[in-house]
Length: 65
Image (cartoon, rainbow, N blue to C red):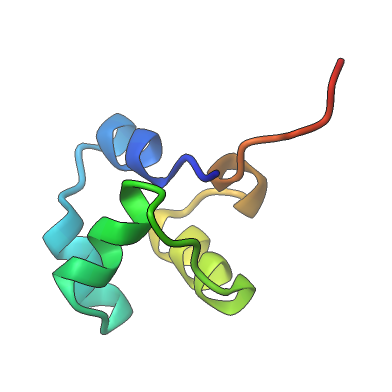
């Protein structure tokens, strides 16, 4: 699971803008945002750079407190 959708909403950024910056199709970015598909680590890193966030902010922790 990822938090790409939440981070985009927090920053007021559209999926189409992110798709353009990544050089990926809107459908691919939408699959990431909807958690139907998870990006490779390299793509997660690129998304974090583009959105100016720590990569940890894009990932949902599975660790139990």
